Length: 167
Image 1 (tube, rainbow, N blue to C red):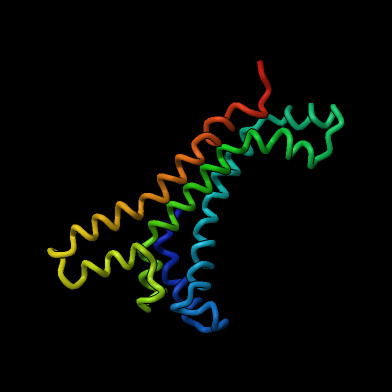
Image 2: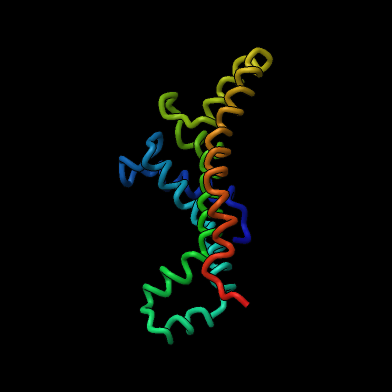
């Protein structure tokens, strides 16, 4: 976690270009998806920090009341963890949608390019004529993120007050 994620690009490129598994090689969506899943695992530390902040008394009280481990997780902990799970999903989604560097390295075929790489490709030839189209594409690329945030906003706010002990 000390080093920035950009330092892993050489290792990821070396693993994917080695052609150990052909369907996970360069210019394949499966290889690109696998690299993105590895990058989205940064959210684990965010979720772990939230798990550590939940009072242990919640587990103990539920166990004394006769709950199983699964019931403690489902009834007590999961409603308390809804905000962080939603936030982690939203951060991972924004990271995948806005990812440019890995997509431009791994996916080189025009039919396989991501939205960010394709938008940048419009500017490569003539930067002055395509700025309006580029700006419109950037606004359209933000639309799914904004819609997803509007939908998940109730889980972020509502989940922070559910499942906890009332004083």
